[in-house]
Picture 1 (cartoon, rainbow, N blue to C red):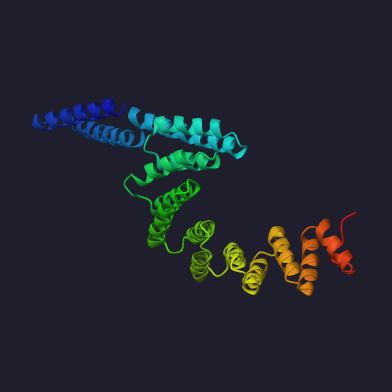
Picture 2: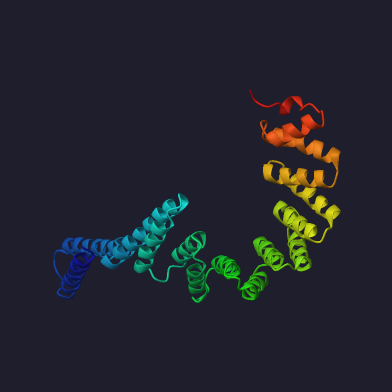
Length: 295
């Protein structure tokens, strides 16, 4: 359409110019022809800019199909159908082989499916591309470290995490995973150091406080462990699992008043919690009115 308008406008302009050279008696015709040629030329430009070429339509259709496959894969992976989800993402990659987001999706799916080598391959494929989005590169480095750790290639995993920390010292999960790797390797002192570094960056992370408490327990540093678990439950008051662990540690340390308080807090979160009710019954303490079990 734009090509026809362009040809029409150029013919009109040529006609006007020819008419000027021959000095026509009908000046009105010349003015109308000039206006029509300008309008036709403007329309040609408009259609050229606004209407996509067949190639553009193809690219948009491909991008739409890739997005549809990603959404479909996410739905399947959410319900545990990993093989189908991964197959869907592989079809998306056949359409767009260098798509970092699809590679990241498939890497995460492989990891959840415990295929750590395949997960590592996809993360490394992302890292092998030209770095455009720092957030994707950071997530890929973290994913690579998780896969390496799962494959018991801990030194390489630690190296990957150190690279990530150089890029972004505020990437809190890097400190957590680093501590977990050290703890897995029975280096509780290095684990404590990693968690502590993370807490210097984010002093309000209940996960890091809990993880450091576990590391302290490995070194029989019970008082420090209880202090960290206390901080964790203060930061995440709604976490039943954290409160239960805090209560169990308090009981083991013979901190009865703390264990009693924990039992009441547990019943606030879960009024029918059997272990808390049994503890209070054993201690001959009545549950608080707002923590009474539902009938």
